Image (cartoon, rainbow, N blue to C red; front, side, top):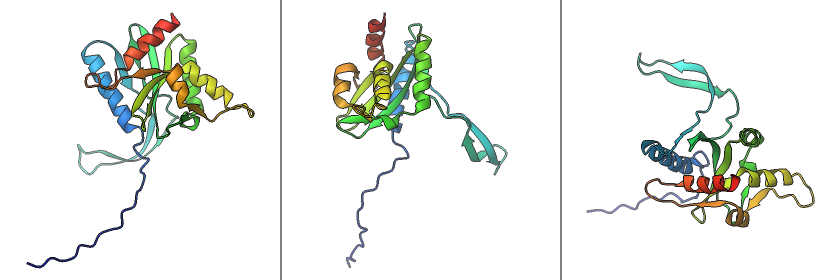
Length: 194
């Protein structure tokens, strides 16, 4: 038996940002399926509006979109109804140990969440601090305060500190069924607004 040397490729760490946030969204979707199946809430992921430009038809029943573009910027990731309340929220993840960058939130999302609150809906973010494996429900009011304050040159921040999440956000427990029981945090948010 002859043992030939194996050529090994140099190991380099590459970061793929294509699916950043997909695990959190998948966990929320699994939780939403649990809520729906147990008649607790009806919450769904919003589809992203696209304009199809070109379709390939390799077979009659196998149409494939080959070219498309976004019609309009997507507002937030999820919306639905819980206990008669309209809720609307977005999912964000951060690798930072100290803060969630405000650049992760887009101006049209702030405007959309503000409109939701103006109509007495419940607006928030679910934020995952990946380094700590901690999840928080951040009320829109806290997000808006930091969003508006970032324009202040003297004391404006470009992020929301981790300590703010510890003090002003609601922790969300990770579990089995539902995976992320964020409606417990929504209940606390509702009780504070009533």
